Length: 174
Image (cartoon, rainbow, N blue to C red; front, side, top):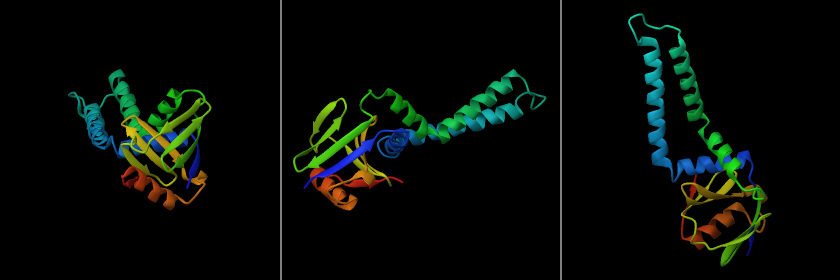
């Protein structure tokens, strides 16, 4: 039995990867960062409106604070897209498309850069989104497999196969 995936690593894929990492191996750190970020936003808004004896004044300091608050809110809201974009810009040329074949004793990933053989004991965690299977190797390294390109079986059959081969349960990430 062989499963095959062809995955294009574009902004959508990198965003899904960033979201999966954030919701799994980076979960605690991400939650702390979000709590801290929202506390800073609230504190900055309160300081802008209630600082000083005269209350709210529109001056250079208030404008700088407002810009910082807007940037911080944007980063908190679009964190996955931003992290995906940064990851996409850091990838090597020739690795934006991958064809991966899963066989009984391992799997092979092929890009324009070359072929890499993998054993099933390498992923630390397995996850699944609506559109991808995600193999997580560390808090900053993962591989995606596009479900829409699967051949050799269905997504359910692949999930069963990969859980059996790795001994790990696939986590659903929404």
